[in-house]
Image (cartoon, rainbow, N blue to C red; front, side, top):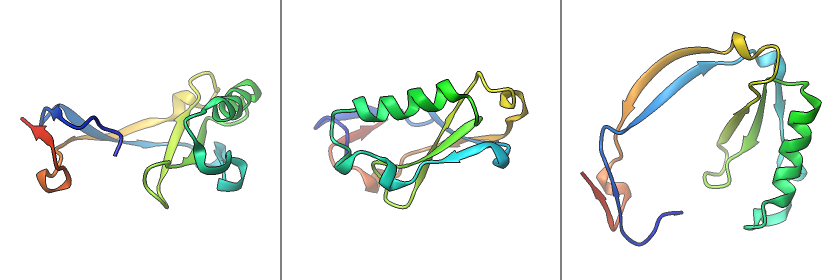
Length: 107
Protein backbone atom coordinates (compact mmCIF):
# COMPACT_ATOMS: atom_id res chain seq x y z
CA UNK A 1 0.00 0.00 0.00
CA UNK A 2 1.30 3.49 -0.81
CA UNK A 3 0.28 5.09 2.50
CA UNK A 4 2.35 6.20 5.49
CA UNK A 5 2.21 4.04 8.60
CA UNK A 6 -0.69 6.09 10.01
CA UNK A 7 -3.02 8.23 7.95
CA UNK A 8 -6.50 9.67 8.41
CA UNK A 9 -9.04 9.38 5.61
CA UNK A 10 -12.24 11.36 5.91
CA UNK A 11 -15.29 9.32 5.00
CA UNK A 12 -17.68 10.94 2.50
CA UNK A 13 -14.79 12.98 1.06
CA UNK A 14 -14.41 10.64 -1.91
CA UNK A 15 -16.57 9.83 -4.92
CA UNK A 16 -16.55 7.47 -7.87
CA UNK A 17 -17.32 9.09 -11.21
CA UNK A 18 -18.44 7.08 -14.22
CA UNK A 19 -17.70 8.58 -17.63
CA UNK A 20 -18.39 7.58 -21.21
CA UNK A 21 -15.36 7.78 -23.53
CA UNK A 22 -15.55 7.35 -27.33
CA UNK A 23 -14.03 3.86 -27.46
CA UNK A 24 -12.85 4.32 -31.04
CA UNK A 25 -10.32 6.82 -29.72
CA UNK A 26 -8.77 4.92 -26.81
CA UNK A 27 -5.13 3.88 -27.10
CA UNK A 28 -4.47 0.67 -25.16
CA UNK A 29 -1.00 0.56 -23.62
CA UNK A 30 0.02 -3.04 -23.06
CA UNK A 31 2.35 -4.35 -20.37
CA UNK A 32 5.27 -5.09 -22.68
CA UNK A 33 5.37 -1.39 -23.67
CA UNK A 34 6.06 -0.43 -20.06
CA UNK A 35 9.44 -0.32 -18.35
CA UNK A 36 10.31 -3.53 -16.47
CA UNK A 37 9.10 -3.79 -12.89
CA UNK A 38 7.82 -0.16 -12.99
CA UNK A 39 10.36 1.17 -10.51
CA UNK A 40 10.25 4.55 -8.82
CA UNK A 41 12.09 5.97 -11.84
CA UNK A 42 9.12 7.31 -13.75
CA UNK A 43 11.10 8.99 -16.56
CA UNK A 44 10.27 6.22 -19.07
CA UNK A 45 6.58 6.41 -18.19
CA UNK A 46 6.70 10.18 -18.60
CA UNK A 47 8.29 9.76 -22.03
CA UNK A 48 5.51 7.38 -23.11
CA UNK A 49 2.73 9.70 -21.98
CA UNK A 50 4.48 12.81 -23.35
CA UNK A 51 4.72 11.14 -26.76
CA UNK A 52 1.07 10.05 -26.59
CA UNK A 53 0.00 13.62 -25.84
CA UNK A 54 2.30 15.06 -28.54
CA UNK A 55 0.82 12.77 -31.20
CA UNK A 56 -2.73 13.79 -30.14
CA UNK A 57 -4.26 10.80 -31.96
CA UNK A 58 -6.40 9.45 -29.10
CA UNK A 59 -8.68 11.09 -26.55
CA UNK A 60 -7.74 8.54 -23.88
CA UNK A 61 -5.07 6.00 -23.07
CA UNK A 62 -5.78 2.84 -21.07
CA UNK A 63 -2.82 1.87 -18.89
CA UNK A 64 -2.37 -1.15 -16.62
CA UNK A 65 -2.72 -0.33 -12.93
CA UNK A 66 0.60 -0.45 -11.08
CA UNK A 67 -1.25 -1.40 -7.89
CA UNK A 68 -4.08 -3.77 -8.87
CA UNK A 69 -3.22 -6.56 -11.30
CA UNK A 70 -5.69 -6.93 -14.21
CA UNK A 71 -7.15 -3.45 -13.60
CA UNK A 72 -6.67 -0.31 -15.67
CA UNK A 73 -6.51 3.46 -15.38
CA UNK A 74 -7.48 5.88 -18.13
CA UNK A 75 -5.54 9.02 -18.96
CA UNK A 76 -7.60 11.66 -20.73
CA UNK A 77 -6.20 14.11 -23.28
CA UNK A 78 -8.08 17.43 -22.85
CA UNK A 79 -6.46 18.79 -26.05
CA UNK A 80 -8.01 16.12 -28.28
CA UNK A 81 -10.92 17.10 -30.56
CA UNK A 82 -13.13 14.36 -29.04
CA UNK A 83 -12.63 15.56 -25.48
CA UNK A 84 -15.99 17.34 -25.55
CA UNK A 85 -17.67 14.00 -26.35
CA UNK A 86 -16.63 12.51 -23.02
CA UNK A 87 -19.74 12.54 -20.85
CA UNK A 88 -20.20 12.26 -17.12
CA UNK A 89 -22.70 9.46 -16.44
CA UNK A 90 -22.80 9.43 -12.64
CA UNK A 91 -21.05 10.49 -9.46
CA UNK A 92 -21.55 8.35 -6.36
CA UNK A 93 -20.17 8.69 -2.84
CA UNK A 94 -17.38 6.29 -1.96
CA UNK A 95 -16.49 5.12 1.54
CA UNK A 96 -13.50 2.98 2.38
CA UNK A 97 -14.26 -0.33 4.04
CA UNK A 98 -12.65 -0.28 7.49
CA UNK A 99 -11.60 -3.94 7.12
CA UNK A 100 -9.25 -3.02 4.25
CA UNK A 101 -6.92 -0.93 6.41
CA UNK A 102 -4.71 -1.62 9.39
CA UNK A 103 -3.39 1.61 10.88
CA UNK A 104 -5.52 3.93 8.79
CA UNK A 105 -7.95 6.06 10.74
CA UNK A 106 -11.32 6.55 9.08
CA UNK A 107 -13.24 9.54 10.39
